[in-house]
Image (cartoon, rainbow over all chains, first blue to last red; front, side):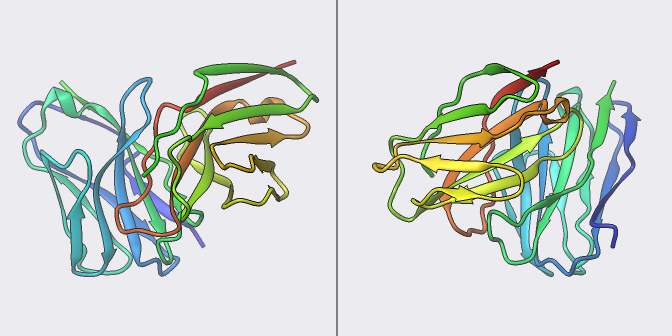
Length: 113
Length: 111
């Protein structure tokens, strides 16, 4: 049981490049979400999903796309990276959306130069 | 969701109890108090939650005042591994719009 797995752990992009941050969970959780954390700040919600085929925007969705074709995977796409997207990205999942039940991944540290 | 106020930072001696306060004066009747913590560079970890009664688990205790306008997370015997940022979150039990984290309290456990 691996929990929530995020890849890659570190990534450096040039401005304008695109990439996908991967998130996979093996707990059969319906709820999945993406957060970003900038230095000295709390986590901010980017996008979330309540099940396969269903996604919605969070607090800071601009510049990011998501899709949820399977229960296990919830990739986050940056279509044209900008320096303002330099951050640490966390993926989380929950079986039923109960607020005590969220499991977080170990994060992806992204630098856009 | 109710707004929460936490001190920016606190220190605690190793082996002593760490008491982390949280104010949530606008909490609604159906909103719970949740505590998560984030150890350096890791993803947040759930600690405990409660509605109005005091709660205890293997990690911590949660004391909620009778008017529910404030609460205290207690780590009974702090260790160096408890050094982390602690987040107090107030919201309904479940919801599609997920958790909202503020800046939390940075707890430093001192040897």
